[in-house]
Every structure is written in structure tokens, then in C-alpha cells.
Length: 271
Image 1 (cartoon, helix red, strand yellow):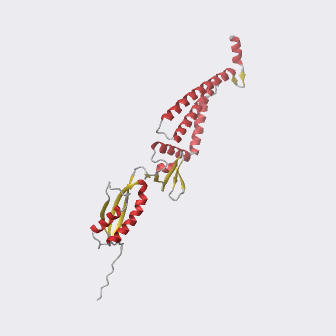
Image 2 (image 1 turned 45 degrees about the vertical axis):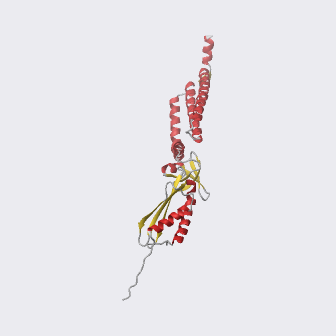
Image 3 (image 1 turned 90 degrees about the vertical axis):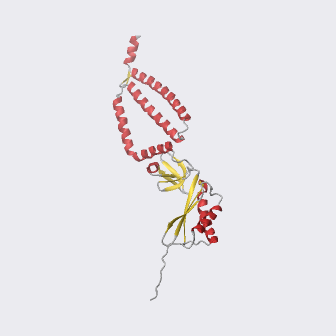
């Protein structure tokens, strides 16, 4: 029996001994079983995690799967008697070369992961980022896509998104509308404030709590500037903004309050 085993051990395929090939096959099967078990465990953990985005879950699963297969290849190569030190070094060099050649892609990728984890905005939010503003359509691994108000699809590299400040106008339920109006010095403060509050009262979308704020802001060369601050729901912001402009104009006209603008009075003195 031992003679038969010794004879089998002496059989080779090319430069590889038959026992090494059999050992590699067994090792591969064990690695395959282990990978399937580990991936099932990873899938269960990812399914239970409600904080991770679906895109991020897919990326994490793929990355773990690739890593496990790389380890499996190294283990099987070692079972075949191949020098794995040089193989690991080759994989490292190839990985470094790829990372340098796709540096921008990797930058967008890791920025995309950062956005998916931190979630500064979500699909449907109205944001201003990297000099663009619009509704967020998708947050991908490489690009964030916005739909602008004039219905243009804009794709912004994720590295640009994470490198700039993000204004999310949909995160909070309420927004404040700020407007300023300039009137003549001939108008009394009480008359101006009353006319503005009358315009505010015409719009039921303007909230009473927080209360509307109307105050004299600044004395200028030939005008007096008043500031108006009112609160509304975020979805009503632009309607309230434009309607407030129109209502103030009508209230000023009804109350006899005169708008004004910067001008210079010239007095001619006759000698």
C-alpha cells in the first residue's frame, strides 16, 4: 500500500507533483465552502443593517467577495508549491499601478462612500452644492445627479461634492423668507410697518409662530430700508417669497407709502 502511495506521489503533471495538485484541489474546495459560508454571513449582516444605503451594501459585498477570492488564490497557489511571496508582491505592485492610474476614479468612489455613510442629503432634497442647485435625483458611487429648476440633469463628481459646502434646503421643515424694502424718508415708521404686516396677513401660508418680524434696518443716503422676516413651510418658500413682494406693493399703494431708491437731490441757487 505504501509502495502504491509512493508511486502515486512520484507521478507529476509537468513540473507539478500529482499530490500537490490533489492537495490544491482539496484546498480550493475548502476555500469555496468557506467563502460561501462567509458571504452568507455578510449578506445577513448587511440585510440587518438599516443605516447602510443599498448601493453601499452592494459595494461592501463585492469588495469582501473579491478580497476572499484573492486570499483563496494565494492559498491554493501555496498548496501547489508556488512561491506566494512573489505572487503577493506582484498583486501589490499591480494594485499600486491601478490605484495611480485611476486616482480620480478612486477619489470619486471613496467620496461616494462618504456621502452614502454621512448622508448630508437624500434623493428628493433641494440642495446647493459645488456651485449648482437642484433636486437630488441619485447619489451614486461616482457621481451625484441633480435636476435643476429648469429641468437640466447635472452630474457632479462626488469628490467635488465632498470638497465643497452643502446647503440642504429640504432637511428642516420650516424656512425663513427674508426681504428688504426701501421707502422714502417722508413715510412714518408706523405706517410702513403697518402696511407690511397687512401684506403678511394676506398670505395664510405665512406662520404666526415664529411671529413675523418687521423692523427699520438702516438709514441710507436718500432712503430708509426695512427688513421683513417671515416663516413658512419649506415647500411654500418660493410662493411666499414672490407673493410677499406683490402683496407689499399693493399694501404700500393702499396706505400711501412710497417706495424710493438711491438718488441725489440737486439744488440750484440763484445769485
